Amino acid sequence: MLIAMISLLPPAYGRLIANVTHDNVELLVLGMMYASALSCLLVDAWRHRRVHPAFAIGSALVIASNQLTYFAQTYTP
Image (tube, rainbow, N blue to C red; front, side, top):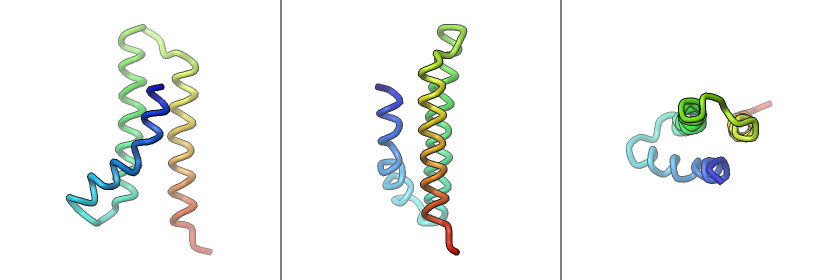
């Protein structure tokens, strides 16, 4: 459920960043998504002394899908 919630955060992060600046909003949202997923992985590793495989795979998929979305939006042939 935590990974599902993290996957819904890009629009919220985009609105939050757009209120402050209009430069490189996409890259800042990607950075915040990386930070969200990696901080959850670090907390899981710290608490349980290991990362649950489902949590690691889910985080990797969320990061990959956001990265691919960014590439699809910025690609100009």
